[in-house]
Image (cartoon, rainbow, N blue to C red):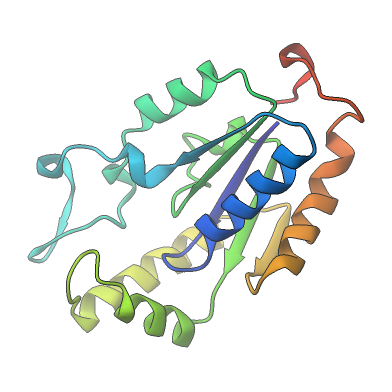
Length: 176
């Protein structure tokens, strides 16, 4: 089973993914996480918007490397998380898709406190918001949620549990 977890920056994708991995692992399943942030192209190849690297552009991802690694994986459950997790180059691989939504005020508050990229100008944050909203319009998730804690882990688990066999599946029985 391959589950895509998508949402705007700072929406809770990584937190949800960690919690899901813990739940699935404690159920005896072997779980692998693919964080899209670890599959970016070289800095020189990242598209630019005005004077900034545009990490929020789909061309910032090394799609070939990411899809190859996912297809090679032989674990029971694969979790793919990232802002472009529903991109057309990867979403056909998924058994289930989870979209984490976030209101603009919360996004701005969380993103402004993020220090990985230094201080970001308001025009860039607006660019990130608009880019994400355009992506969401194209999304066809199995589950939409506002991430606010463990109750969402239960909702995701309730959605995917019927697709997991009662005993640990063999690689050949995993639906992709």
